[in-house]
View 1: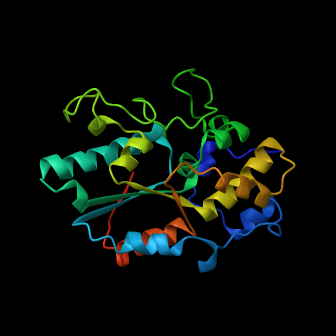
View 2: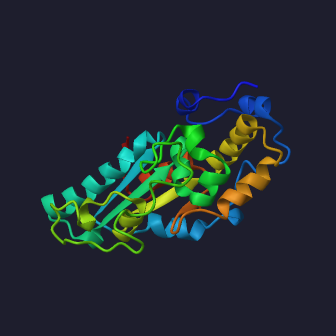
Amino acid sequence: MNPISRRSFVGQASFGLAALTALGTTADAQLVYTRADWKVSEFDELLKNPARVKQAYDVIPVGDGKFLNNIKNSLNGLHFGFGIPADQIKVVGAMHGPANMLNYDDYVWEKYRIGEWLKVEDPKTGKPATRNPFYFSKAGNPPKYASQDPDSEKSSYQDTSMQALQARGVKFLSCHTATEEQANVLIEKYSLSQKREEIVKDMLAHTVPGVLVVASMVAAIALLQSEGRFSYITV
């Protein structure tokens, strides 16, 4: 068996049909969502959001979650630096490729050894993460902040957790296509006995709160730009 390395996975945004077939049969997979399969109405509401400034982050590499700091900087810069009211800012984290796994909870990270696969270390242990280290705030659950000063590291304005960013209005998206492809990679890497669709359904039942699973992220980004008037940034 030749396990797929993180480098080779990051180097490609998606697998072609031939590559998927080489990894395993596609007969048990639902590779394509139709409109009836997911929450299209929730995505349509996102497109119609009337905010003055709308920004979509196209995120593929995990990169130690540094893109979350970029999102935090966007929110702070727009609000404090340019004086845009917080309710007139809408930021979307469109995560696919390896970053898609940030949309899933500790159960998924432990069961499918996500930290080991993606070479993500738990900052508390220095070992491969068996929990999602990017979701929960260090300020507790729910977060309780010691300061309201935006310059303070102890304020919500400097909190780069997904949980804190969601509280500030950020919407995180997960890619169904990526989840299907990644389930197949996990089967190959760890010699799992489950079928791909069993793993996908298991993962989808364990998205972190507030995440919207879209049919295809590259398609969703196109609509965010063309119909939703979201500016585009990739990190």
